[in-house]
Amino acid sequence: MTRGEVRTLTSVAEAIIPRGGDFALGAADVGLGERATAWMERLPASARRQLRVLLRAWEAGPLASRHVRPFSRLSPEARTAWIETCAESRAPWRRVPLVLLKMLVLAAFTADPRVEAALGYTYDCLDPHPPRRGARLAPLQYPDVQGDVDEAVDACIIGSGAGGAVVAHELARAGLRVLVLEEGAYFTQDDFHGPPMERVQRLYRSGGATLAFGRPTIPLPLGKCVGGTTVVNSGTCFRTPDRVLRAWEAEEGVEDADPSTMAPYFDEVERAISVRPVPWEIIGRNAELFDRGVQALGLRGAPILRNIDGCHGCGQCAFGCPSDAKQAMHLSYLPAAAAAGARLYARCRADRVVVEGGRAAGVEATLLDRHDDRPRGRLRVRAPLVVVAAGTVHTPGLLARSGVRHRALGRNLRIHPAVAVVGYFREEVRAWRGTLQSYFVDHLQESHGVMIEVTNPVPGIGTAALPGVGAAIKTGLARFPYAASAGLFVSDTGAGRVIGLGGTREPLLTYRLASGDARGLLTGIALVSEIFFAAGAESVYPAVAGLGELHHPREAGVLRDGGFGAAALMPTGFHPMGTARMGRDPGRAVVDSRGAVHGVHGLYVADASLFPTCVGVNPQVSIMAFATRIARRIAA
Image (cartoon, rainbow, N blue to C red; front, side):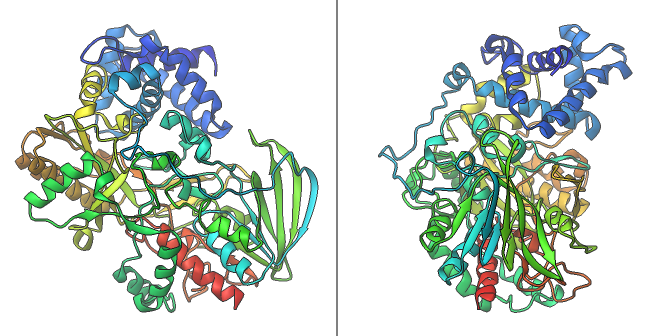
């Protein structure tokens, strides 16, 4: 970063989090400019470029206003006035850049030990007993392997997440020689410590800075490690809803996907990853308060089903489980696959599938350095079966580089947009303690496609949702221990694209939030607000541009009257899917109902890119069930 960019970032940090006020510490007190700069320098080059462009645009913004000076050259009072104007604006081009910078600044700020202590945040778990130690893997990686390497196997699996790990296990236990390639590094519970945002930089693709550009621009965090996003997801386990399976069969031509046919696959997956409800003993105060509001309104809610065995209620699931309780792929299916003979390469990027005479013949890949993306060797795999499970964002590019041409490839991107609502209580909640995602309400799922899921606000992540900037942020930080939060997802009908930029560069993602989906989210925000008030909240922050804190449940009604649209929301996408859709019709679908790529023998897809529409629930169990079905077809 240039000195000018560092100056801009420092000026932004000190304007967003000034000294004094209700929370004593400010950005200048902890050297936040230097800390945030150091974080940016550790990001991958593509993410750094995006943030540097953002900083330059922010620096130039006031030039077109009455201030007529770059941001860092404004007086402290003028900087405050400018960021407050942007924070209150309903124009996305003004508000969204500030939101992104605010996320970076608050994440770096709350990672400082002095700030953690002032918030009262500790890393202790509700269950104080020593954690278990799960299974361990021994992946092949540089420097143990380097230079030119050749392999010959029966099946090569690209990706080790919910799809790839399951296929690897199924094929290995069927007697095939299986090789799994994973671009990310291998982490264990020994690595799952420290501030949440520092773990995000290690465990997530592009340091957690993946974005889908559109109106609004939407963050899309993706895991990048052995086990894929299952290592950093919330552990929530829902089956594909029956109505979705029936629609896929009737409207999308997905054969044998009816609920009764899929039920045995769901049963088997749930047994393999120990799916069970969150115990009330570790559910946490956040969920207890929400349940109180749900009961007061006569609604139906329940603890979420999760893939846990020995959960301690640490509330850190999205940053790697420190107790090895969440049965992610690196603790469940991958060890089982290894026991059956499968082998795994980590830090190995698949560049293309080799196709000869209309048949898959193998994979060409690059061996990467453990600490960065420097090439350290080449891997050539000969295999008559190749299963691509690189994820919704990266499977389309890999298929395209391998010669697959289809008009639907990379299109139909669904992201399951989510927003958060915060309720403020008189009592101290410390909502980060307990299970991260713990309790659900499906009251709006049939009518609006909305699923409400109580999700804990972890400092470093949750603080980014605090209202306002400047003095308002300081008040929000002081109130953070008294805040409860819940999230909600909408089964999106809007769609986006994954656009390859050539070579192995990260693709460009575009997405437009549909107006109907925005209405669903706003209806969900209104209901969550009413639940918090029924639970005893003194006020609710709905995180809707142009609308401040609510102080009475009647005020939530304005969210249902159509006065706000997509531009007023700042969602996050957690569950991308749909970019290599399955179906009977080769003209409309990239793969058939069993995952085989139309027109290429021996090439399959087994990840969320298969799904023709949004699943409507957290998708990991759906991915695993369909991956099991695909693997059984291959092995038959």
